[in-house]
Amino acid sequence: MCWLKREIILCLTSIAVLWGCHARIVSTPVPSSGGPVENAYIDLQPGWRVRVVVPLLKSGRYTLDTTPQQGSGTTITLSVGADFLGYETDYYRLTPRTHGGVHITFALAEATKDGQTIRQSAPVVNLFESLRGSRYLRLLYLRRASEADHNMAALGADRKDPLEALTRRVQSDPAACVSDTPPDVCLWMPVGIAVRPEIWNVVDGTKEWTPAR
Image (cartoon, rainbow, N blue to C red; front, side, top):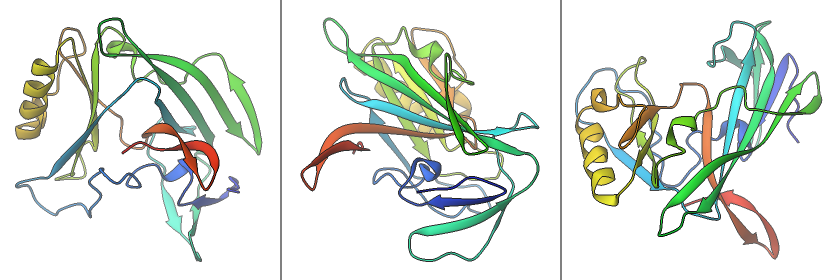
């Protein structure tokens, strides 16, 4: 179990550290300068879900200033300041579209503050609203070349060929990720917000949501 107080304990296998735990996500130290970067992506599929974790901060930011403390095993203890209020976990369902593709819709939001979890009627940040009209959806992971860079973009298109072309453009030049309107959409996921696609799977004889690969 992960306890969130002024001292925040993050289990590495939990949603609070979604970034970097996916097998296809590029997870490396931030390079000190620009240059070639590696990219990876995953296409969202019907039957999956997307789990999003948003830090709730007084400042309205999404990046949490933390100080590492002593940890053991798969647990890291981080100390957070007065800016930290809690976190929200949002779930999006992925359902099939007629004639192929996938539809993403908001399913559930839960805000956790002071040890209490309360269901919310809407997400605090609706990351995928602009992608609801897209038939094919892709999460593109980029290795950051500087502290100002984003880690992930969500791409959408009506057909596969334009999605591939958009992916290549953004891989070659992240500045090409600028459109929030159909037919070809590219949205940066805010730094500090964790996004993980998950699949309903059987693990040791028990069904549970696991990272999609």
